[in-house]
Amino acid sequence: MRVFISSSVYDLIDIRAELAEQLRAIGITPVLSDDKLSDFRVQHDVNSIETCLVNVDSCDEFLLILDQRMGLL
Image 1 (tube, rainbow, N blue to C red):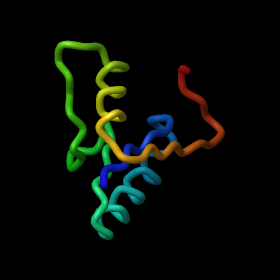
Image 2 (spheres, helix red, strand yellow; image 1 turned 30 degrees about the vertical axis):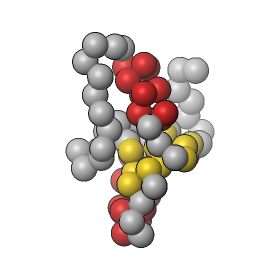
Image 3 (cartoon, helix red, strand yellow; image 1 turned 180 degrees about the vertical axis):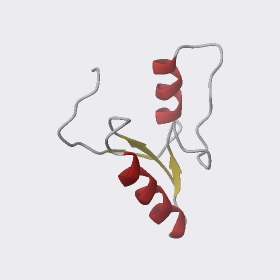
Image 4 (cartoon, rainbow, N blue to C red; image 1 turned 60 degrees about the vertical axis):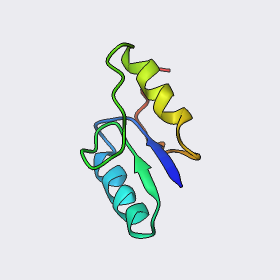
C-alpha cells in the first residue's frame, strides 16, 4: 500500500517524517515530496503541481495533515 502524505511544507516537517517512519515500520510505503527515502517520482517534463498530482494518483490513500498554517490552494 502507498500513502501520499501532504501538509504545509515548513511547519510540519517533523510530523511528516515521524509519520513516514511509522508507516514504513508497518510495511506501508509513504510518498512525500521532501523525503529522500520516499518513492516520490519527479516528473521533469511538467510543473511541480502536475508532478504532485501524478504521485497522488499513484497512491492508494491520501493523508492531509492540517495545522494553523495554510498553503496556496
